[in-house]
Length: 101
Image (cartoon, rainbow, N blue to C red; front, side):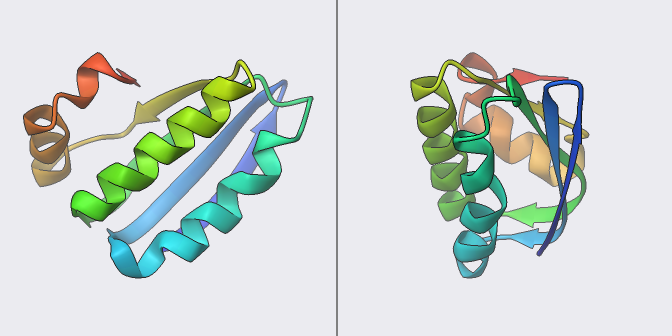
């Protein structure tokens, strides 16, 4: 998985590409950790348009991201969700935990 971060007007976007699974937990954490303490960031969008696979550990990483950002009063949005990735998120009822656009 590759993670690219863009910031604009208080909004940070983490664009993911490839497989989002257990092997990528360090890369994902390294991508979002600086955003937790950045006072200029008010919300984070995770862009899944380049993700073709995610597993249960990826769901756990998203929950950890939500907890860390929520503790700082920052929103987390999931975008670009499609195909089997959308199915996994729907089965896990993540639409009740995240805003999915």
